Length: 147
Image (tube, rainbow, N blue to C red):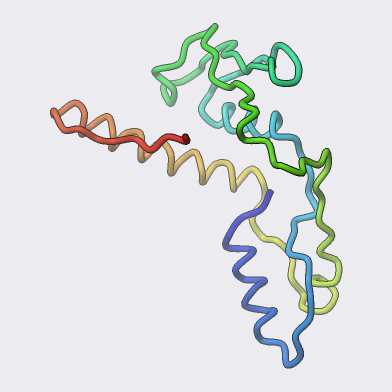
């Protein structure tokens, strides 16, 4: 999990080198998708519980605090596993070691996971509010969905 601004900054540093070299661009931080989802939900004031395992696992709203998630209610299932999105060569653990980039180029990620999630949620909330405003005024506002 890392922020594009950090990764682009690292790419720029790599391009400034006189001799090409391979560097790992990574945060050296590892969390589960479930933890990421819980953090994102918490940013909205939503507490989740998870039930089931494997393809039967679901994220269920336990409680909602505040007004950032007005369409969610306790008991709503908001996360489900979809095997269509599994990687063909799924691995259990992905963790990159950016030590060489740090030692040779001085690169250290500056944007932490909490800030990344907060920024993503803020952007998604702005989009949702825009969609709601258009809909409230009679405009069709297509929402992109995964196939």
